[in-house]
Image (cartoon, rainbow, N blue to C red; front, top):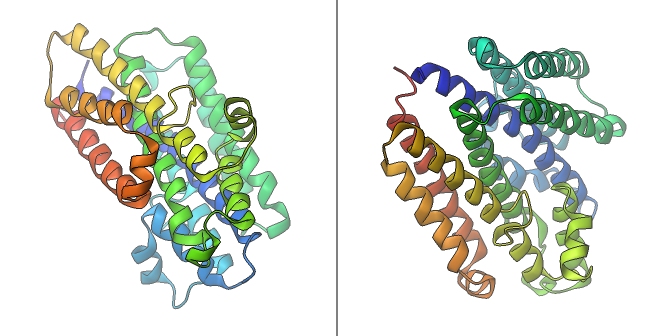
Length: 313
């Protein structure tokens, strides 16, 4: 396969996944703001920090406000990680690899772009935000479903899936890290009823509320929730699940090309960390620090995949 085709598929699905997860990050911020006694706009500082766009936001805004932060994450074209920018970039990559996509996948992608372009033409009112977030999630799910149900399990499929799960792992770690930027008003709140409500908000933002109740009998504990989203391999948005899929799809590529690259070793190392670490040890040493290190290693893997498979050749 040409490197640019692999690149187009990989980034198409990274951008689609990112659009959905930025919407989920906004949802997390909205849900968590409801648990705060303060209504200050600085509640959104942590959300922007976790999205990795705090400095970029400051370049175009004199102050931080709730409405501006949401609009910047949702529809600002100067923000390459806004939902609308990601949908644009995903569709552009899809056009570039149009002949590698099934008709169903292309139509789902194009319809997503048309709908969201209309929906996000103007600032979204607060009362409309839940429905807008749901539309974004549904449209992204339709693209994945069309692709999954109509594509051969070949190298095209593998590059798309690797892009999806690298992006999903990055975003799950960022949503979880919001807890440490935004949620707790003081150390004394740890383990309190407020703390538990905030952790529940994290679960709802990643559509894991029902699944968590099945896995942990519905008892909200910070350690169990952190374990669920990091180390539980049955949870489809957990870090461990993402790396099971990344290692698997990279393995298929190694078989196809009869070549093992540095990316394979990096992915194996990250998966081993997630398989062997205990959540109590992670929490004792600092969940925020663990997540920061994970994001760094995940980014390293993305760069190694790009170099190893000559995405720009």
